[in-house]
Image 1 (cartoon, rainbow, N blue to C red):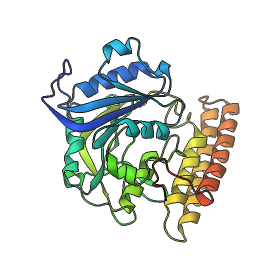
Image 2 (cartoon, helix red, strand yellow):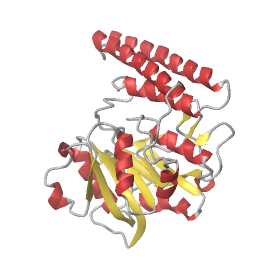
Image 3 (tube, one colour):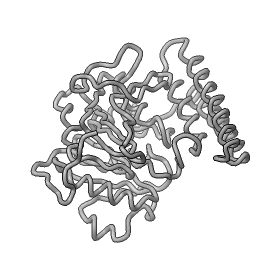
Amino acid sequence: MPEDADLGSPSATTSADVSVIVCTLDRPEPLAECLRAIWRQTVAPAEILVVTGSDASLPPGFAADFSEVRLVNAPGRNLSVSRNAGIREASCAIAAFCDDDAAPQRAWLQELLRPFSAPEVAAVGGTVYDAREVPARLDFVCGLIRPSGRQMRIRAPDIAGEARAPRGWFCNVCGCNFALRRQALLEIGGFDEFYEFAYEEADVAVRLFRAGWRVVHAPDAVVLHGMVPGGYREDDLINRNWHAEIKNQVYFGLKNGWGPAARPAVLARALARLVKLRLRWARAVREGQLAKAASGEYLRSARRGFLAGLRAGAFAKRKLPFARSR
């Protein structure tokens, strides 16, 4: 992992036409650290927008300590709604996203912006380390995704991160570390707000590619992700919002899959995941990590999510927030 420089004071000597957007909900302390890390970038953003789900999301004394930040209100627990709200208010050509519990390293923004010198590039994803472990563990770099929803989160970086994905795969980005060409996002309709959490950035990456844009990686654009518990995740393996996880996996696959074999493959993959999750929860109950009642509720919630994703992906035609009027 790259060593970070002294973070004692801002050191940017140049600025860029980029809006940094941070969506936050009820995590004021991590948010404050995230904003300080953004201010310490080697390249300064033209503006920082904080999209809040509630007033409790803001650190004490926010108005005084973070007076240069623009606030955007997007009540509720839907990350796609919040991302679209930030895009509406952003004034720059490029919008960079960072989670409120992530700490961008000093050259994060500088490296994330490099690939946009190519006019055909619409999205750039960076590298993510899991900061809960010491030393921090690599969690995402040069990731790929298939239309079925199958993901590869870690692979060897290509030269400059710009080589095209193998056949049948798309370059993916991680939600806590990516940037978009704002006009390209508007042209494809914005974030699909059916994804309240999980798969929303992957859906955008696939739609951008199919619209003729390129999605590439910037491996040297690094953030440390604290993965602080929140409304959708207590931890990565057991305690999560499984309704949203399974619903969005099924919806993503049915929406983006190609060919007659895509739909059966998507459903088979989701059902296999349900089986694996049930075994994992049963083991957690035996080991005292999870109450039996909670295990049963997770299973029911995941099954409801499967059906909701099936209905939306197979039958519903959703209108995107920025869809052009016909």
